[in-house]
Amino acid sequence: MATLFDVRDEEALMAGLHQAHAALSRGEIVVVPTDTVYGIGVSPRVPGAIDRVVGAKGRGRDMAPPILVSGSDQVSGLVAEGAVTDHVQDLMKQFWPGALTVVLPVSPDLDIDIGETPGTIALRAPDQTALLELLRMHGPLAVTSANRHGEPPATSVFHAINTFGDEVAVYLNAGSGSDTDHTPSTIVDATDLATGGTRLVILREGAISAKELTSAGFEVGQ
Image 1: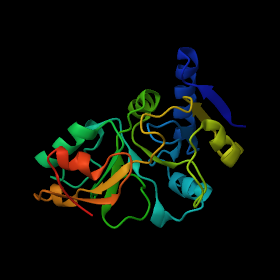
Image 2 (image 1 turned 180 degrees about the vertical axis):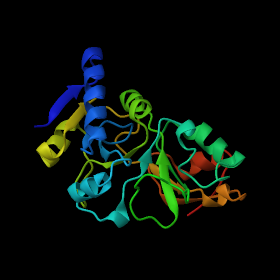
Image 3 (image 1 turned 90 degrees about the horizontal axis):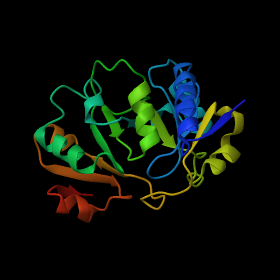
């Protein structure tokens, strides 16, 4: 049976983080608050976990979730050697934690399951305190918006509960507030930056606008 924790309460926060960590270690699904919408996620280190979460979502392995990290220090080992160039570091420094998903060349020696991707990995550090604590405790997580494929993303934990019920082991509730008004993250292809170039390509414009990226000093394309 699923358990629900209100992470706005300090005691419930610690209990919820430990329960979520244990569930993730068993390959089970958790629902977490992010700085955009609620997410449904698993540990990519556990065999079969990715299949479980994309199955719950109603997707295939070719539409696997992005990987959430606590910060740039967890990126090493996930991306190809040399991919974190000065420009990539600058991008992460300016927009992480925050609503920017960065696509980079994946490490050929990756030892976690991220689904079927075209040689890349999508990474984000969310600006949500409880989730960042869970990421520091457990390590990177594969997290996608908490909804069935084709339906609106969950903007409250109760929306997610109504959708997934006991398919999820642990629900973490942080209320319905969001600094980005529940707009999904912006996704940028930074593979050119990772190979010495200067250009970002916007794959999905969301909470962070093209103008914000340009104002931060990046060359932006569509």
